[in-house]
Amino acid sequence: MNIWNAQHFLGAPEQKREAARRSRWLAGMLVLGATVISGVCAAPAFGQTGASTPPSQGPPERNVDCVLGLPTMKHHTMGVLTVQPGALRFASEKAKADISIASILDIFTSNDSKQIFSGVGGNIARAAVPYGGGRVLALFSHGTEVLTVEYTDADGGFHGAIFVTPKGQATALKAQLVAGGAKASIPPEAPGQEEKKP
Amino acid sequence: MKQPIRAALPILFAFVLVGTGLLLAGSLSPVSGAPPQAAAAAQATPKLTATAIQIDLLDPGDLPIPPEFRVAVYEYLVAAVERSNKFQHVYRSGNHGAAGGNDLVILKTTAQAFTKGSQKQREVTTVSGATSIKIHAEFTDRSGKVLLEKDLEGKVRFFGGNLDATNDFAKKLFTLIGQTF
Image 1 (cartoon, each protein chain N blue to C red):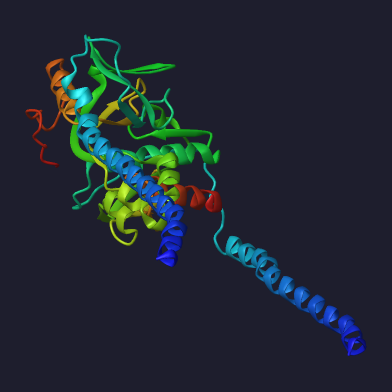
Image 2: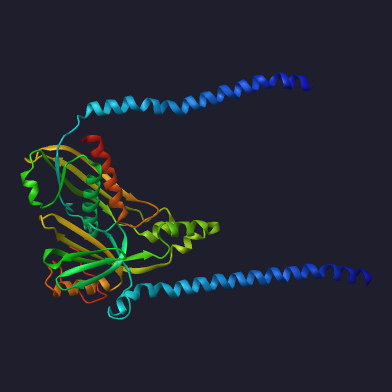
């Protein structure tokens, strides 16, 4: 009996440590679960921000990526893309660039997707997750649309600008541009429909 | 017992020293051998000279190349040619100023193969989902005589968006311009 008691009392701190370890593990799993759930919930919201918010409400969100094609902008500049009277305007934090509607030769839209954890930061984040778990992060993506605008400069030189916009925004912009007099070999479709490529 | 070990130490040290020297010599020999090869290649292909270049839009041929890829190839090409500083004037396709240039070369590109991959697939599997574009690049003079032609391929295998394949192609063309002009 004495021996059992001794063993029992000797095992008590061990049990406490075990319980503490389990509670820490549970808390960790809860935090991980919450992160994954919030990530999944946030993913569709990324795609809807630009499409559903009217331009007049609040300060404009710089959610359009100007991949290339505007002479005054660096590649992959984030900014706001709007249709102004007579021009398509891209405004970043520092500069503005206009493409005259009269100079536009053609406009195309296409659907694409963008990784949420992308770029240098995303790669580091993925590499930081042990046991190759970073690949799971690559599963999180959101729908985007690509707007390609072909236009000419004052000397007649051909230019092409590529913008990655939230889903639905490129189609809406194309419709506005065509309504404003821009040329397009493929007529604009209703939002949500992908146009057939030439 | 300690005496023989002490005696062997200088011999061991000499062996290590000789080994290191041989390794260094082995690693340096291809580098030292490269310049004569490069010089021979440079002698074999005479350098072209031109003060102006006109860059034409990518001809997609029969391939279903999305418009953004066609535009990205063209824009990255223009940027690469401008960055090379080999020409006084870089004219875009359709530029009226190109008509007046004396020694103008025209860069024409034609798509030969195109595979659109998936960024998600690439980053999840790391073995599939690569995007690649194979392009035939041709430098001609004003009369249409071909001065230089080469097939180049742009790829994105692991990280980056699909359009990065076009930038990869432009980088290869940048190197070709550096070697040729």
